[in-house]
View (tube, rainbow, N blue to C red):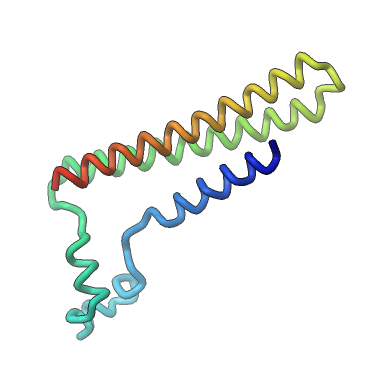
Length: 126
């Protein structure tokens, strides 16, 4: 169970870490200072988000909601872990805490899947 939780949390943290499409060349201004013909800058131009403000707003709202769900789920996992530790060996308390952890992990997976589906659909609307 510990390995499963570790793998899920690791994959979620990596997926949130790689969700940005901004390249280092854009951040450092390389594309603006004579390097605009490079492959990195051309790829960045081709992958820019659409100029439709509605799609941009929807993507931003979905990202904010996903982050909030992630934060709430982590707080629930921490509280449930503490309940499990401080349960004093009561099987009902331990089972309740374990189920809360499982539900929080399922909630994270559903939120990640929902965000992926919405972003996929919005990218197809470009």
